Image 1 (cartoon, helix red, strand yellow):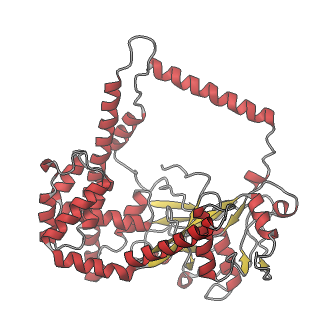
Image 2 (cartoon, rainbow, N blue to C red; image 1 turned 180 degrees about the horizontal axis):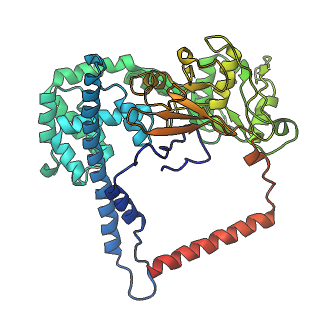
Image 3 (spheres, helix red, strand yellow; image 1 turned 135 degrees about the horizontal axis):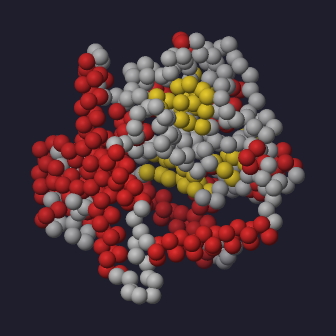
Length: 489
């Protein structure tokens, strides 16, 4: 059974007991063998053999590559089985195999989007690029570099792709000592030689995929990324660079060149120096953190955990530099004492009302499918409305669009617990828990993330300097004990 990830994060997934073995006995034996592996550390005499340690590292790397190749073959076999099962059940031809990528993702502990890419990689390797698969199987390529080759040949026909696969076979020495960039360059050159027109059309079509995205970064920062055509991207960067150089040459010393470029981007995009004219604060925090200076961290929906001091500063920040009045809305979200559960009310409506939607979004933070960190797009009835499910906080879950559609596929509803008649069922507990069962009978559990003020974190007393010193002493003792165990082994 798979363990939890961190401290019961969103999408904590574990196949439940009784859902069948997660892997065969031979896989468990192999895992045990690798886990119990202990390198020979120096113990005075004889000296450790450094060359053998490097050989062991290389052998384990080859093992990882061989495992990735085996996973690709298994994924294709599962896809064939699933399609045959769907066809026997009368599923339309254009819907055969739907949900396979989602099950591959759960089994590999990846997001649904990553599962789809892994299934596509497996299909390309097994059906069209056998030499690349062989190189992966023997450790001459790792999974990431095999992915690069598949990605760069995706626009080619099956015949041309096979030809490129033969041109770039590992036994030709093309990849000896080559890094990622060299592999990409070789794949692009080979693809262009085979079908220059298609490659050119692909480059032209790439401009239609331009977009701007936002994702969290460490220390309450974010990555604002723009995918632009090369001419526009270079022009934007050049304009920001020129402006930064102008200010630096004029005597600007309080900000670095990079800081000026970032501030200019915000100002020119939003039209205000600070970039903010009005904010609706969606911080989830305790009253102790807000009013009493408590160290309990807050949570910013869509981002994650933020320090208590940062949360207080954000709420009490002054007006923007322009002197324009800053409009601030504070939405109060209350949690039950000790348990940390958000307080909400049921609804008789078919659709979740706005207030209840906000509650569920604040509780779930991101998509509730295990390993999926996508933003919440749909508020879904766990037990479907047409099966008697209520529009309530307990029966609601935040899902991304793809996971909500996957949940409605055949097999995801017929394999649920008989007493519940739903794709997912809620389980009692301090935090909201739901179980999702796939067509193969595997059950995965998802627990809502802990909210600020939960008993597990709110009742932990402040740690004194003596307490921290004792923890460091225990850590050192454990480290020395492990080293002694390795020497004995």
